[in-house]
Length: 251
Image (cartoon, rainbow, N blue to C red):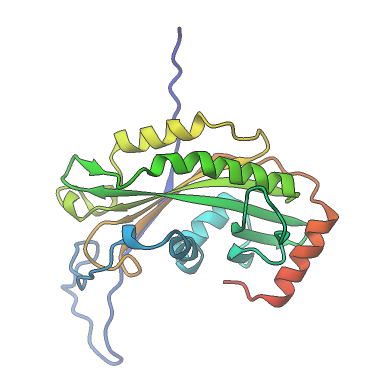
């Protein structure tokens, strides 16, 4: 038996913020990416899935990376957590909603289903994954396959890995995400799922490297592991997409 190793490549951006009142002089000794920002009690792993999906579109580095990986223009319409008018009210099959949609054109709606995996670094080398999250991957694939059945042009499953990494202070700012062993486990469980050939697969890592709020200081990485195969979008879905973008502002 021959085992073939696979290599995946993330594109990433790190960001740090320094705030000062209007007119204040900026101290040239202020160091970025050093964990010197204000301490926050809020951990990324405590945010709800809905909140973190909204973070992807509200946070410029994350939004730009996603759009670049999908090869979409910067002004693409984006909306998170949509039911009406895209999902029929009497639908009894997954998905119950669309976690994230990008619409470069009403005839080309890109539906993305998201499940998050929480990872907490307890030490430099040890991770903890709270709860029984890995079972969510099966649900994710069911929902993404269901989006394809609805009739969108492109459909994706997105595995979102959140990591709270201040305990990895021995590593540099951009290396405090999930350990390789944890990521490999998530990756292979996902790849073993019966994802439809037309459905794409994206991995996203959001890391809170310090105790500063991740809105001000963090790292985001995106990997397009498998591009979706574009389909002929159904006229009914195109009509609903037109209704969506006509009445709801883009994020």
